[in-house]
Image (cartoon, rainbow, N blue to C red; front, side):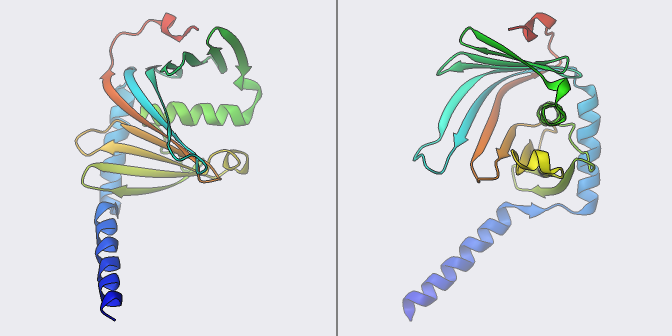
Length: 210
């Protein structure tokens, strides 16, 4: 009996912690938050940042960790350059995706694929914070002591096959994205954490060539 009582109070304690960690934002908070983010995203011309990426798969005991640098130039130039533990870059440019896998190059024409175009738009929007599109997503808003969190559920079935949910983390004292979590239908996910972020630094177009 005593052990059941202890277990009961333990569950209540844990539940209260979880509720305290993540709470739904009020309508007024959502309006204020969206206004600030949209205002900031319009002022962003470039982003330079380091990142650490964690790939979580249930059958692995440890997440796969990679790192590198990301460059973004409005409206839609984007370069993910992985440097550890291997060299690999992905450039989104002019509706095309340029891949350089340690010297082996490949190009995908995203303009010929609505799915690729949508994913490209989501990735660019996730980086810049410009993702409040009710036509493409069902969006919910939460907050913790550290972050405002937007959870985006894709509405189209073609995207749902690959992405179940996108979580964007905005620090309380900042209105630019600091973390992105891409959740797959299987429950596996990729989490990207941005470090040493620079806004509106000069970036030449040559940075988007691989």
